[in-house]
Length: 478
Image 1: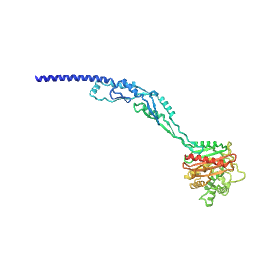
Image 2: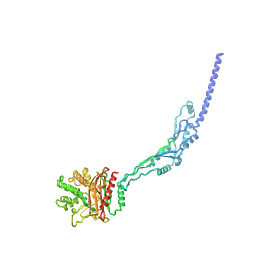
Image 3: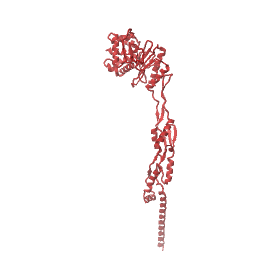
């Protein structure tokens, strides 16, 4: 009897357990059916976790998340871009349709089995599908740039110090780059923060053309109604500045530069002491007598022949407007020498018929002299390869550096700056100075001629040349 009672108890216990299991399965099935009607766990749409949400809940969440403004940083300014401003729209219908296929295309019982065993399903990622108006975004950024870009301030001339005052840098929005970065921020639900691309736009460095404009402005302010011709050559870059080019001027004592060059050309050796004194006196003392002695040596005892030889060799160097038809202080009727410059009918400085040049010819000669002295290159070395050496060119430049007058070009540079130059004065209507300036910011050639139909007052004219020289020096050393 005891054995049969125990068996019945076990049978009922088993039946109850089976019923409980069936009930649990039914409850789990009902629960799973409720869950299966929503999006599966682990699913993200447009990087937003939506697992377990209904389609309606997911749509509301996505809309809310992607409606948040994008934070824009323009340097120190913080602004906000509302997605609606650029017609931003999520394609929620198509994204949710894709998400729903993962539920309907999966086997019910297979998924239910995984659910019972609490097996996580594979993560499901639905990428974002959205659109907005690129044109509206561009317009937004253009307006932003209009309000916040800062244009650089260009350099300008200080009219009192004649120093070129550097400008200040600016900055501007890089619209194309910023559009790309904003596009990425619009595609994510978090960290919708953008550092806009802002390019520094440095102030323009003064150009040699800007220097020319500033010199023009300076001369215009003076009300000077004569002629100022200028030639500047940057000896590092070769860049040139010309004003009133191709005007024939009296050669003045500036013609002693080609005379010294010709003297070294005819010398086979170092000049003897007596000749060296004559060479030095021609430049440092600006002696016309010594210059005529050198012309005589160039012409084998004939000054006029020496002038003719000099003219021919200047032509070989490409100086088409430079000639000597006689010697210094010569009297009498000079021969008629025609050049492109003195044949002009629009401008006439009444140049000396015995010797003429142009600022660009003298600038070209000084440039060749500099090149020859530095490394034996340039036109002088090409035209007279065995006649004029680098050492001789260096001697000429050194001699020109000893011409100290403390005015004209020299007065426009700081003390201690080497200026290898030769100046000249006409019969009251012309002043000229031509030289090489060795400055910390770069070496350059400068030739300045000033002419007026009436008498040139030295106290008025010399400062004009000095101030132009100062402006040029400040340009190279700003």
